[in-house]
Length: 429
Image (cartoon, rainbow, N blue to C red):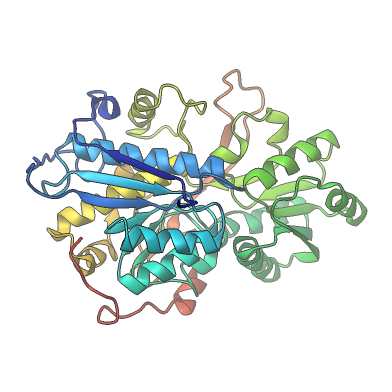
């Protein structure tokens, strides 16, 4: 009996709950296709966590993918073919991620893989995907190395990375809160590569890193780290701590009354990591790629479609992780339509360099898929706690937004060496 948790679901009927009859923005806003029942479905493998440090984020990621699939099937599918999906738990573990990817491709007959939170898991999945030529949409892992040294021809990175977030915030924080910084870093690939980006910007803008404190994954008692920070007395703590680790850390900082001094700069803030926490635990500044209260075309309708499809979920509004899962899946289907084929090389070429309007993305600036690194270059938002909010869901206050050009990770292009098309196995999914 396999240890993997498997979820299978066929979405073969119109998903009226997903659309709710509402208009929506995106590549198919004015088109309609019709399914041919005799054509085999397109099979998608969800490679997301259902257990471990990022289980909550993995669930949100999957909800985004499922809504995009439901909406595509409600329109008649992609190239007249319905979409099926299979989910296997990657367990927030790279070794499991590798085994899951292998099984998805060789036994579950998945022509595309979607999903990731943990960057080490994403890297493991992408190595297997490249071996078989299977397009892999890395929805939510954000180590700079994912679009840099660990890039692949088949992999597309949809979240902003640690460098993007750092560029949007480090210089301003040095000017406002001082040059003396401590780095608090999750001890794995995302933490290390994010910390490296922050160090480089500190050096560039005249900041002083007095110490970096490494935090093992799975830490629940941060007392020794917080005592050390009190002793060092920095102006800023740059924390690259994620998932359940971050939730525990924030609760303990608040209990010790350390939320206001020093200033806490969280490289990024994923909605599932903090949803439901008291606002007192949302001190400091942090980055995100999307927020459900942005006053932009399509956002309110998007929230309504989420609530119609997921009326029973504890997370009553969509966050950035859901958003990334949804948009990555939607854009994969749009690329297949543009290519007029499920041939992986044709779809890769349809994705590379593709420009997405701010309206379609529900962001402030147009975005594009970098043809050199396969990372989506997009708007970065800086936020803090929405203190005084009477709406328990409205937890963030957006402070500023940074354009893709200003936040772009220029180092990734030098580190990324994509495999050639000829070296990538070709097939029709």
